[in-house]
Image 1 (cartoon, rainbow, N blue to C red):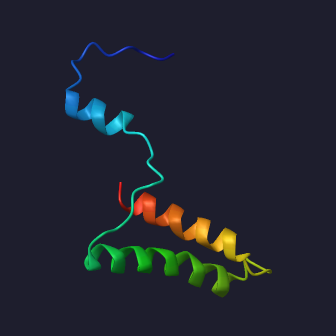
Image 2 (image 1 turned 30 degrees about the vertical axis):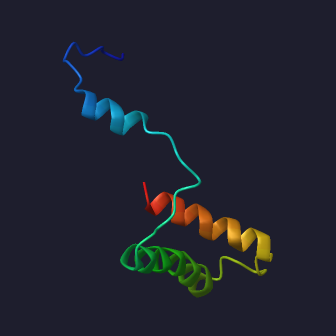
Image 3 (image 1 turned 30 degrees about the horizontal axis):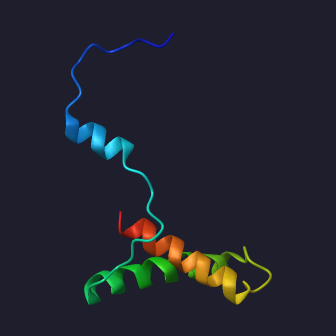
Length: 75
């Protein structure tokens, strides 16, 4: 059975929980771009090592993949 908590919720917690995904965010600084590049390469290495991907992504799909990771890392 779910119980309702009567504890007050701070506005910081609400903002963090309710923040919406913004697909148009991107890493602007060189340091942030390096982190995003590593975040893109990491799953690609896993796909290669584990043999999870048999076919190469189409260029448009690769660009979407990279933009999605970029936007997620900039949250």
